[in-house]
Every structure is written in C-alpha cells, then in structure tokens.
Length: 159
Image 1 (cartoon, rainbow, N blue to C red):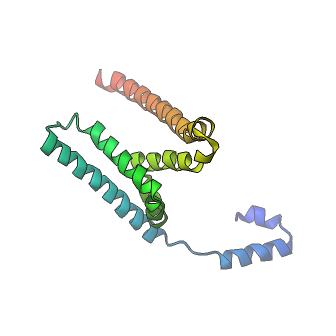
Image 2 (cartoon, one colour):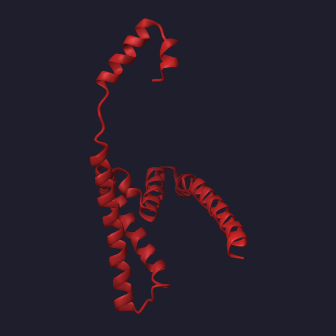
Image 3 (tube, rainbow, N blue to C red):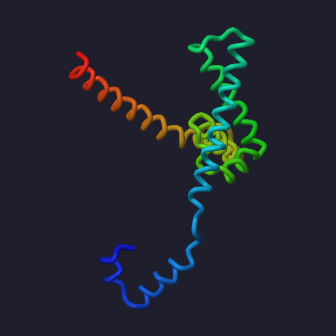
C-alpha cells in the first residue's frame, strides 16, 4: 500500500494491513511463468505437428495449411473442453492455455456448455458469443491502429 494512503488509515486499519501482508500467500511467479511457457509452447508444438502432417500427407502448402490446422485445434479444444480435460490443463498451466486459438475456443465452448439448459437460441446462441464480441472488436481495433502506424511509418521512412 502506498505510504500516503497508509497515513490516512487509523491505527487499527494499519495493524490489519500489516497482518494481511504477513498472511498473504506468496505466489510462485517463476514456476507459474515456466509452466505457462511450457504448456503454451507444447500447444503450439501440437499445432505445428498438425500443420506438418497436413503438408506432408495432404499436399497443403505453407500458405494454405493454416485454416485446416486452426480448425483441427478448435475441434481438439472442443472435445477437451467438453470432457473437462481442458479445465484441468488450465488450472495447471494458467495463462499457458490462453494461446489465442485454443484459449478463445475454450472460452466460447465453455460458455455454450454452461448455458445449454436455457435453450439453443436464448441460452447457447446469445451467451456463447458474449466473450467473442469484445475480443473481435478490440482485435479489429488493434489491427486498425497497428496498420495505421505501419502505414504512417512506411510513408515517412520508406517512401
């Protein structure tokens, strides 16, 4: 807590803040980062293996292999989420399971499963994309800003 805010507290509140800081559970940040890195890297490794499989056996090129690879990762995530396995992986790895495609697919599928009792239209259909909407909006907005910055930079430096 900031010292300025601490001065505004009465003595009992200050004692409580000190006790709270002593009792606070220390998070193993290095271990959590390592687990997230390894699991996220393993998910990406699986994606690369799928892409290599498609290129070797189905004659996809590096430019065309992306869509079937993404679709396969989404299907795998769908089954792992449906059987509850992805949740256990997420509890172990934390942010490592937030690799964009699998994390996004898990979030959408989890909300669809959670609201299935409310019906397909009002339950699954409306609640499934509550997370997808903000992600898409901010993703498109971020892409626009980055493209704008790139265009300005290339006009002044490259043109």
